[in-house]
Length: 199
Image (cartoon, rainbow, N blue to C red):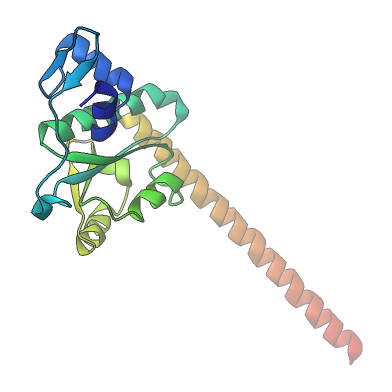
């Protein structure tokens, strides 16, 4: 298989595959022809009984665009992990957004797909800050195993960003509710005034 086709088959960029070839880190045997073409000895076809087994979707996330380099490194580590475990990578999703945000478009689109049976993440907080256990249960019901590579705690910086987001959200709700309560009180007062004037 040609190197560009190989890169596409395992879900990595051609540049990454080329770099792995140059540094001798390509996980499958490869050779270079006289014309310079790199051929990788890799066959993605599996027996029919294994067609959906070990099909992995990789999900990488960081909280802000300032961490985009970390997002790329996270995705690369997960790709290397998947290859080392013999997984067939069918999707590699990278997203920038808070772990508290329950409206992440790329994660939502990924969860609606049914062409994988393993969802691979680096840390559990990459999927969600809270409720990962419940997501795991729901994924299992649909035949998808959630595989978390690193169960250690993740960085404090992103946790602080999320804490600020939680406090801001609660403050906005609290002040919004007070404002809403005042509006309701004014409406009731106006209705009472209108009632007494009509009598």
